[in-house]
Image (cartoon, rainbow, N blue to C red; front, side, top):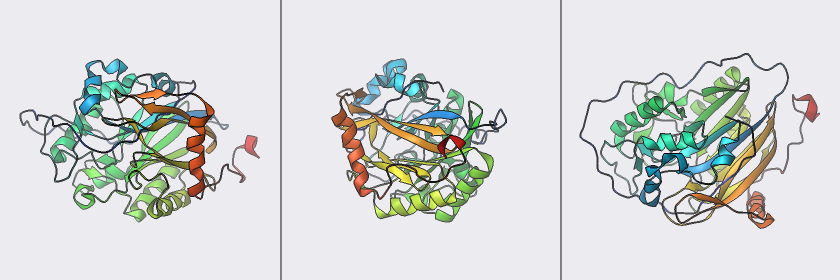
Length: 357
């Protein structure tokens, strides 16, 4: 967490994975500590200006697996944008394991523990694992994903060893501000078997709207800013679907301040839903195949309210890394997507921050 300009990268791509060779089976790792952390300082007496950075789907397979030979440079030239933020968050579209058995689905992604090393080296402070690849290698692989994150010191959210842990907010102190992070998956594939249970590891599902909104309300009571990172949308479609819009409205009503999304493999539009800022889709960021628009979304927040959102544009390069691009056309391609979102281009209500009145 630092202070400097940010950048965004988005990629268009399909879903396929290179095969991985499982390591010999060993005993399951011990359970990590709860994902929620008590804040280290009291809430600020006056509204604080923060800059958050968000990017879409990241994994290390196929051409991007080679990037882990040097984890310090794996994310590539967008690293300064991420590391310059007060808080940087991406979607980890992969199991982190060398064990497990592939689940009955078409695409399987996994990476070694050095994936976490690469993410930390890029200045990423936390990752969501609420997606349709976190359990690609079953609950054995998912246990490794959780334990290796804890060992690397990189917080994850949106999944856990029980349903309570999966839906619990990750609360991080950011310059004296308590920031809560929650993640939910709205993908149908294996949703019933991958969802977390009372004593079953898994991820937090958006389909359980009452539980998801209760989690947001609980986070609202504990934190100064509540951010939700969803895995949702129709693949390759740049407009949000009805399920996305309905769930966004429910989350906003429960008290979410920012709602960020990924999964569609393309950029989707952004804007304000009342006082809640929504970015429906950030596309691919570090991706194993293809190319396309991407970037780092820079969101400036005063108090609880997002006052400005800017995509630092990029394109997925031949290495799978995001490469920055310049010029107004790249930014306009993102802002033009707002037309089908139903979102406003700014927040015009009365905020709790005196500077915005």
